[in-house]
Image 1 (cartoon, rainbow, N blue to C red):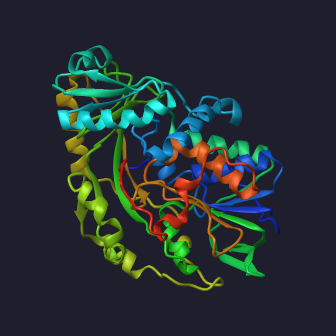
Image 2: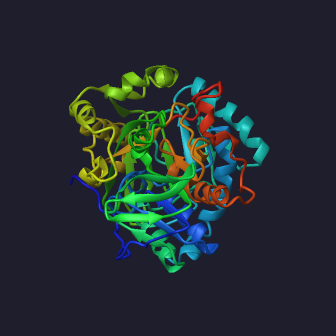
Length: 443
């Protein structure tokens, strides 16, 4: 069955005339940012052009991990794990959070050596991550048929349910006094005295002093209309979920050519960890030199494709005034078709490695567009050239797991509080100040 089922929420009916902070984007980053602001008594409005959590925040694998993260993201991952384990109480709802452990299996000694090198970063934080020998894998992942060189295992890593977690967070935001508007695209920002003064939506104007853009895959387009060049491309991920299935391991597992994790409903979410589609679009050429190091490093994982999206993005309006319909109103929700060949390949590889999946039945399959930066690290911070304007975007497929801490950090920055983690690694200026941009963690 093609498509994905994601919970919806009842939005607020009316547009406020003013709000201390307006958050653009109703994914996990935007919703959690607003939730922490609202809990501090700050009036906050979330404007979502489509439905809450209906793009990548509801389409990801549902992994909540610290293992394998870019070293700069590890503190954010630790804080997120602390927040996730208390999330159901925090939001007064079910997010599906479960500490189930995650295993990265390695086909070769070279890949195992990469995992061992990552452990050097992890030891600083006293994580429970450890290497498994080929013999030890059987005890952790019984029933496997593939000979692995070893694995990296983090028992404390976890999972949650994307299709229900973000809507639950949004309901909590509303209970704390935040306003959530759906099908309400922000067209742009008005300034006063050189700083943010209001946002203009398709339904009217909201006066505000601060704006947070948490626009995911739409961020580059929105920023371009402001004259801000943000290096971001979209990567197509393809996923399917199964009917309930007994027998396979309960740990989440990432291999070179498949990935799976058990779901709260008894089924499994399955994808191809070593294959994503990189659509060739006009921005692919504009940003070629920004992404060339990443492309070389991930050449075996990214499948370049030239298709309809090239023309779609070429025809997309790049500049607009605030009194006309924008691209955000013409395309409410990015709902791309998954790559059926990639999913079929993942299924074959998975069954060959773990025969317990042989009887799986596919319930749903879907695609999602991941907002990727050149170093696969997000931007979280203020835009220096426009006081009062903040970015929380470019999460490169990592946003669901680290979303709670990223939202908390963004709220800290917006309010001027001491940040929960050092935000230096996430500064926007790293793309223009001569910093070395290096891909470590991948998408």
